[in-house]
Image (cartoon, rainbow, N blue to C red):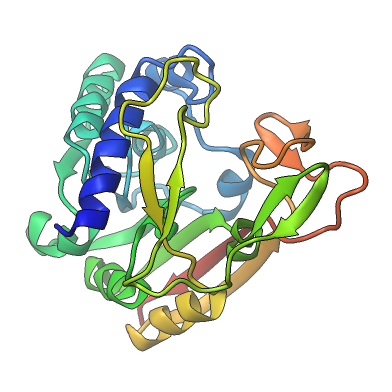
Length: 272
């Protein structure tokens, strides 16, 4: 593991410990433990019928969405994440919810081997996933390797255009370039995690890479998948900029006075 990803692992171990004991309600822990779902309205409306499907959730974090997919009718669910603290929390939640699920600790790039080269009906990837990865083409190859013929990917994440801007004095200020070289990631320092938890992070540095949507689409096509849909959305599930307004349960949009830009995007792709 290179220094960039090692730094991110320390950061995400910290976040996992905080999120697994979240008291803000951001992760909908009680709902999942009661047999419900933590999925937001957007992904729930787009993922399609998952009844009887075998699903692998890449970068599953503390596993609550993974368990939700099982509660929503999946035949089997497997979550994979590189954080041992996140995986420990996910297994604990599965036990508490009395929900059958498998959780594996591994880098997403090592997923095929870590999962025993098993294949799935659906690869599920959502919210804050791909901008942590330096190589989107390698990621797409992993996704393709995990899908059985006829299987499909559902990807939903923050829009790369949104990540280019910072909210400054009630305006959007273009700050970052539209694509990030693998060898020169963006460096950020955050004292606290995004849930509003007042407990500080110990490891505050993190590295990110912006991937243009064209790169993500072309990576999936090069990996042998076909594109089913590409949607752009003006909503997020967190308040990314100051002044964003809540327009639904954990759903936020830019407030009056801001220009409209896409805040998130989703892709459906299938393996022939």
